[in-house]
Amino acid sequence: MYSYTGIQQVAIYMGMPILIIGVFGEILIIIVFLSLKTFREKSCAFYLTIMSLFNVGQLLFCLFPQIMIQGFDIDLTRTSVFYCKCRIFIRQLCTLMSCTCMGLATMDQFFATCSTIWWQQL
Image 1 (tube, helix red, strand yellow):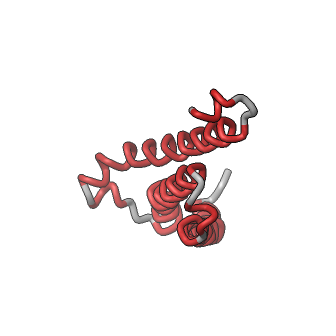
Image 2: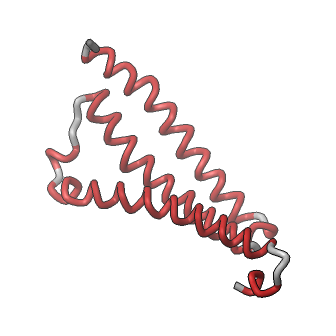
Image 3: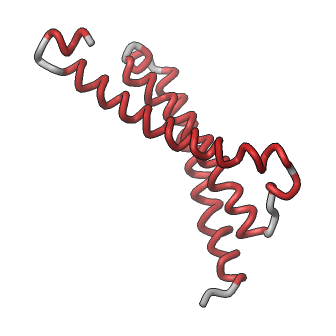
C-alpha cells in the first residue's frame, strides 16, 4: 500500500520536471520548425509543428492538473464548472490531434519520397 505522502512526492518530484522539460522541449521544436527556412518549405514540418502545439496542450491539460490534484491536493474541477465540463474534451482533442498529425506527417513523407509519380502528386 502507498501512503498519500509518497504519492504527493512522486507527483511533485517526477511530474514537475517532466512538465517543465516537456513544455520547454516542445516550444524549442516549434521555434526550430518556424524559424528555419528548410523546415518552413516542407509540408511535413507543418504537421509536426501542429503536433507540438497539441503536445503542449496535452502536457498542460493532462499532466499539470494531475500534479495539482495528486501533489498539492488542489482540484481545479471543483472550482471551475467550465473547466470541469471541458477538461475531458480538451484532453481527448489534444491526444487525438497529436496522433493524427503524426500519422499525416508520416503519410506525407511516404508520398513525397515514393518512386511512383502518381503517389508523389498526392
